[in-house]
Image: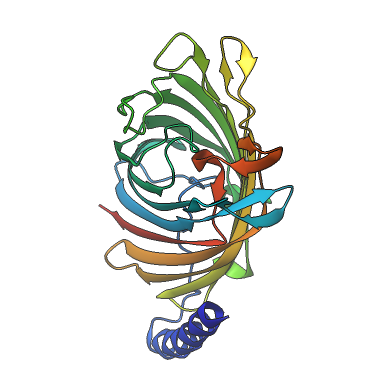
Length: 320
């Protein structure tokens, strides 16, 4: 409740500032800026030919609960204390416009997973830190509202590359993969309001040993954004993710997971410099983790099955 109160107070103040700035700005209709959450890509849009966008996302989460079929439980072993994973992730992205609706981009994460748990009960999982795997994506907008269509539509085709370390404390998978996606967006109110969604599927093959097939990933993302002024956006963003069960020696590892988050977003824009800074508090709507270990006929979560009640996401972007 304190977090909601702080966010509400900050939003109210920014609304007043945005209104004042908007009255002083030029009289054209303010335009919606970029999405904040890291998992959502450019979706339905594209970047002009010759433009280069540099983006840095940051995500913080304190994972110390266990979700089963949507119900939240304390991640505690008898006599062993509470498991906890303090998760911080930076993601560097660059995106370049090729023209004719095409652009290319890549994303490389730097991950810091700091676990605190009994190593024997968490299947030997220790803290994991370092550079993760990189995704390269070709993006094409093939329907555009600017050309008279009712919506803008674009597709994605990407390659997952194993750039991360596969050591015991690394965050890489060692797997190659392919990604496909589709995004749809609709701007209205002269571009002041924007509704957008995307669907994505990532197939990942065999990991760093020939024995493990890495889980695949299915995502649904969406947002509604309103341009308060030329300098401020406010909205709601949501992200749904399903990770399939990984397999070892052809047998399932019982580690599938489903997560669904949503929450408010706020973005400060400097259109004259092509820059923006956004923040979103994402709250858990539903989570389910299969990974567990049995102790005395009672299931307890492994370190890989820890979830968070909420997470903070930020994004800084500048276009040259």
